[in-house]
Amino acid sequence: MKRLFLLTQLLTALLVSAQNKEVTITIDPVAQNIYMLTGQGGNIGVFKNEKGLFIIDDQFARLSEKIFTGLKTISDQPVTMVINTHYHGDHTGGNENMTKKGATIFAQKNVRSRMERNQKEKGNVVANSLPVITFDEGLQLHFDAESIQAFHVHNAHTDGDALIYFAKGNVLHMGDTFFNGRYPYIDLNSGGSIKGYIKASEKALLLANDDTKIIPGHGALATKKDLQDFLKMLKDITANIQKEIDAGKSEEDIIKNETLTANYDSKGYGSGFINSERMRKTIYVSLTK
Image 1 (cartoon, one colour):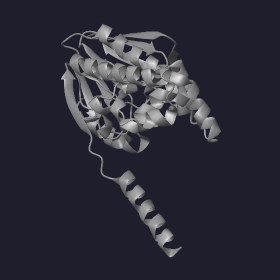
Image 2 (cartoon, helix red, strand yellow; image 1 turned 120 degrees about the vertical axis):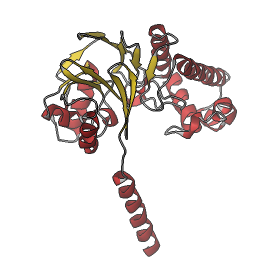
Image 3 (cartoon, rainbow, N blue to C red; image 1 turned 30 degrees about the vertical axis):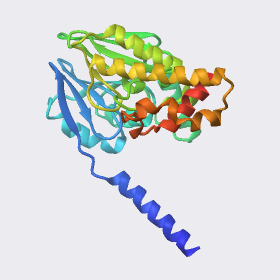
Image 4 (spheres, rainbow, N blue to C red; image 1 turned 60 degrees about the vertical axis):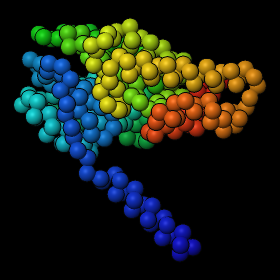
């Protein structure tokens, strides 16, 4: 019993240490007046414009002050607009802090619905964190030097994903519909699906050309070729698993069958948050639910 208590204490200490680990905010230029900010959580897109700073996602609340400090190196202007690519906390956790500084939050309508529902279930609705402007299929924003288009992609990572495209800068932010070089997390319990995820990548490739800079939800800044490789991975593994399903193989058979993902495991795709076993399980469940 004493050993169990000590083990529990150790695990708790490790968890607290990981949460409090020093996070470095890095800002990289992507195109004229467009930047990518990385820290902990989803990659943030930043656009400097005549109205202030327009940002895509805002990571965790505990990082907001560091993010504000980093943004000051881009402009002394405040964050005036935030668009959430979906509802997960590593992309929306800073919403309340952004609104307190005067920002307006935008998102696809399902993002607000899911955030509000989750907060009600926890008994703590934080109105300032919710998007105040929502859209269904798309939204266009016009600035002096840039036009921004937001596109809803259905049932991909979740049921509220949006792709954000900067037409003049030729920059595409894909949120968590793209994990560069990694297996993606597909939130099946929030409307996500492998078929919708594949369609999201296909739609993104219709927007992109060889010069497009692509900001993924997680991972390094990407090119069209990176996204093409990612899409091929999704299609190949999905086809492999569908063949096994058609052959009558069980969920357990498919989860244990390492050959289904072996080609991409060897390329490091399973080294991120989602390992190969979880990827096989996710695709199986999505194809059979």
